[in-house]
Image 1: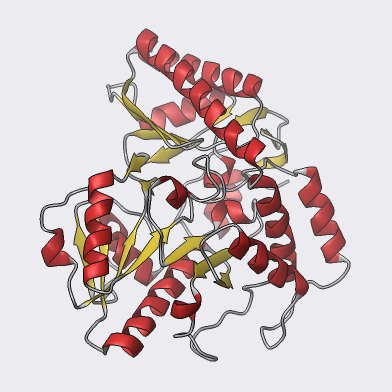
Image 2 (image 1 turned 90 degrees about the vertical axis):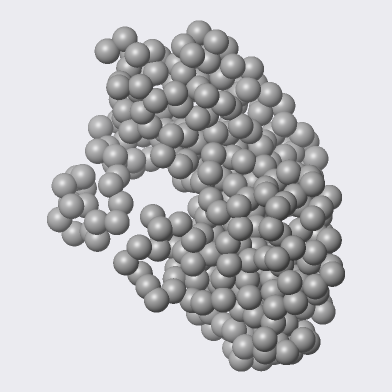
Length: 400
């Protein structure tokens, strides 16, 4: 039997995982190696949006596994073509590129934007504007986009030509977004910052400046996309038409896949040989993702996300009224941030450990926020039960 000690013995120490090892899961329930049960409010960081071992996805994966597992991109395959078609049909996009992760999709999006700017406006139009408190991945390019010292310290020199501006701040944007700017990269909802939404006037200013200066808008929908915020993609709620969006996480419900979505005009800049991937467009991943998009894009499912969000808000506000434990509660669909009132006994680490002890899996955001990102189809009774565990856990810490 695998043990937690084996992680310390054999794994590179970039994580500090919990002491238990999950071995089985179904829906929004996870069991560890000692048969202890947990309610899953994490879904693998907003990944298993249809829950664990969702039967239609198991069926699709089994069927595809009996046909073709992998091909090089010297060939195409039906699952990739079908997935590309449905993504174009249900979004602004006209062309798709498949990758393996959100970070790879972001890398490819920046490459695409720079290539488009170079071909259409010259080599000096290459700067990328990103925003403080963002999270775009862990590669060298994406930590450069993130910009925080916590992410970048010790990894230099980083890719150049990237500028940062305070999120939701209009002052100074006109100097930041100019004729040298190839693209603006932003999240419409910042997850790592604690579920912070972009303000309307901020987005209006970004759109105006990008139009004036022929700047592409790249929306990072790696975590906000595929139904997480109550629409198939978050951009639908913000009166903005992106030039490029990136997707991953919930797209494969746990099977690794990422995607770049863009227009015909922009895609023309990326000719044969301009970009590539070994595993992107894998038939197994694409067959699963196609079923995910078919399911998540249904109006009944998306409307239920908003209903479940209201249930979370109501119950969390009740907990806060009783325990006075949150400074604020931010939500964007089933993507919730509860900023803790830190005390000697109540902090992010102690709350997570106590939740694990009591049978609840939640996430961190920033250094002070509980992040909740359950399955989009989690049952209402499990929501109530999980929040009762959260209340119990915080109460126990306050009484300690």
